[in-house]
Image (cartoon, rainbow, N blue to C red; front, side):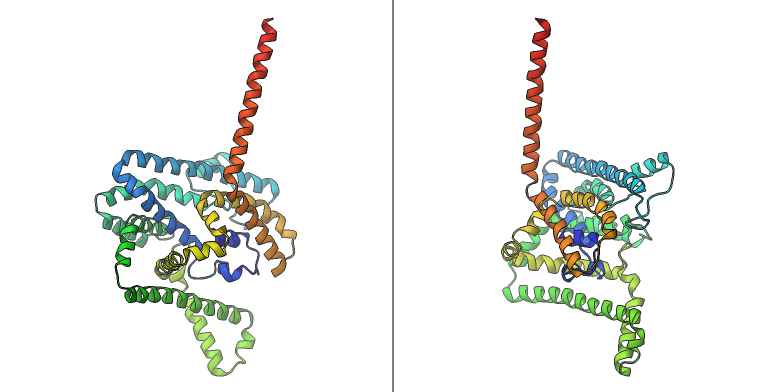
Length: 376
């Protein structure tokens, strides 16, 4: 959530680029968002489904329905907001140019989505079909889910849903069997655990570093080609060779259709990050002062709130200077506001409920008094 918010603010350069990578790498936080969402469905709802499938399915569908309503609401809100504000085209996604009835129809049928809460549309579909995955897992036919999901991904074409569903549904299977997997890992000898951990983390870190070098060299060739060609022949030829390799492999790491290279690295990096976080969980929580934990406990609330903040922010930011200092201050201010809102969300809700109940009590008493005076 931290990385997604910063990247959606889109104020570069920023000190936070060291953490976020601007979303330019072969992997991003977005894929992790889908993976961990599926993993939590399997981990939390899987055991409940085996005990009471009907009740659990109803609860999951209710969650999908809520996301659907919020998605429709936000799309219409941001669309009409953007039209009235004269938002420059391409700020996020171009506003659909059509009549009102077609706009509403395409929004209700999830064909059109607009704004920074656009991932909700995909979660509506994935969560709706989650009980089907849990059904096959409960029947111990989890492998059918993996085969079906992989087949859908193989024929994805340019469909985002068909591509990214593999992260969510593989996550469901992994989440359901997570306790068993962790137990099997823990019974391994310590040297073997270390070898596996070092191998996975090493591949992930090595791939990210190599990717970072390729991104840097690509920008160097693009913006300073005249400088590159005047370097020693071996150096310049190596830079050009690596740049050509980066360009030619782009389709394998394409984000929207989830290329095979990106998908493979997504799973490796997710497992590596999981191993690191589980090992240093307490230290990470203490040194980040619980900020990451707070953002992670209410991801849908945080994601929705960030969407509401970012839309007017992008209209306002057009007139702001853009440098490392200003961008860092702006990023920090937005993150701090969202963190505080998530941290004290329950308190705000409780205060709002108390105020509402007091207003109702006052109104009821006042109405009774007026009724008594009328009778007299």
